[in-house]
Amino acid sequence: MSGGSISRSVLAAVVVIVVVTAVLGALAAYRLRGPSVTLTVATYTGAPAQPLLELAAEEFMKEHPGVKVNVVAYPFSQYITNELTVLQSRSPEYDVVTYTTTTVGEVAPYLLQLNSSAVNATDILKPDLDAAGLYYNPSNGSVEWVGVPIQTDGLVIIYNTKYFDNATLQQEFYDEYHAQLNPWTWHNWSVVVDVSQFFVQHNITKYGVLAFTDQGDLLDNTFLPIFGYFYINNATLNCGNPMGVVSFGTLFYGCPAAGARYPMPAVNSSAGVQALELLRQLVSYMPNPTQLQVTFDNELELLLQNGTAPAAVGYIGEMPDLVQSRANASQFAIAPLPGSTIRIGLTYIGVSKYSAHKRLALEFLQLVESPQFQELAFTSAYVFPSTRGAYELIISNSSLPAYLREWAQAALAAANTSAIVAPYFPSITSSVVNQAGEYIFNYVTSAQQSPQAAAQEVAGVLARAVEAYYQGSPS
Image 1 (cartoon, one colour):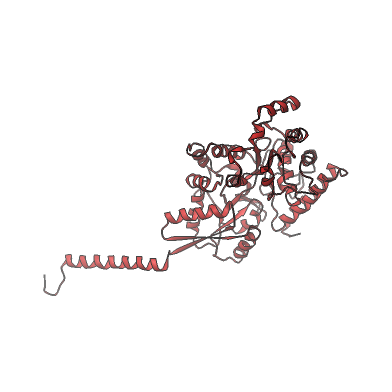
Image 2: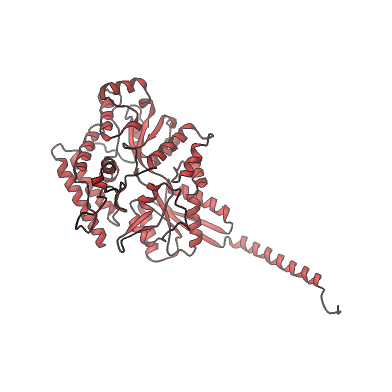
């Protein structure tokens, strides 16, 4: 070795020192400037979306040390407008966005199409995925997969077990109506009317089974569950598609009429007339809607008042409020709607086409859909899962209170096979729902109008809305 050269061993040591110094310097710089990537998730404030997605953000950051997940939440009445402003400008500001069964048509054109290599759909409950994870694109006639459900939610029967598990009441009801009082046995809506009549006429409760009676809810959340029973069980209406036409759901015939360019409303059928008649009977055992309307905001409060009502057609998503309320949550139970189904109403997330971090965004969707995370969401925030694997974990978890496992079993039974689906009409959904709701409200509060006339009025609103949707017109 010459006097001016450096030995290989010394050179190697110098290289190691330099590399280590560079790494330590990079780590120090990283700590100063924070994560190298920020993934932004846009959603609405309140349950279930905000708490679930914030929990998912925490878990995702644990698994991805170099990533910060920022959940931005806006009031429910504003979040879609905010998301659309960003998406329509093709901005990469949001990576993951939130939507629901009634807003998928507005957001879907800006979402990345999913496939089995991106997200495994085999474990997702089919009604949950089909209701609005899939989107009918009128521009090319294709059905696209654009989002995944973050939970299971929808209308079911929420009932007070102190009334329905009472052996004396069970026998009295059976003697009078020759049917079981147990809500799991309600195979049609006529039984629900009988139950309401029984509780009111025997002065057991002030009202019968509650349902929403405000104008904005009457179409989608009260008439639709009743009509949906007939729809699912009538091949003439559903044409072999029990969830109806993708994006238009249960209020439209499941197959196009001869020569028709658009799906045709099915509510002016004999089934629609029957559903309206049953609805008016149910409302007759509720608070008079002209004096006190049952709404999403007061239904649970009414149900919790002793002696007010035995049961309600309510959202699964309301159950956490029971856990956190003064009431004994174990006193309440869930059953599917008559016909063993659910009027589905879910929250979904999708990946923006303009995200600069699509791979990470897809990994975020994968985490949210994992059974392990969904079990965590249920046990910590009482958000009901959308995957069978999560239900299996919950139901077998003996450390959970029995009533929570029973709620999970009921939610799975309700959403496991088919579902009643509300339609959406981008940008005009609220006006359609309110106009149709006004016709239904006038019918249930007036003895003069015929159900046939009301059904025709509602069908007219829906027909005009679907035509406007296909033509891309807001009116």
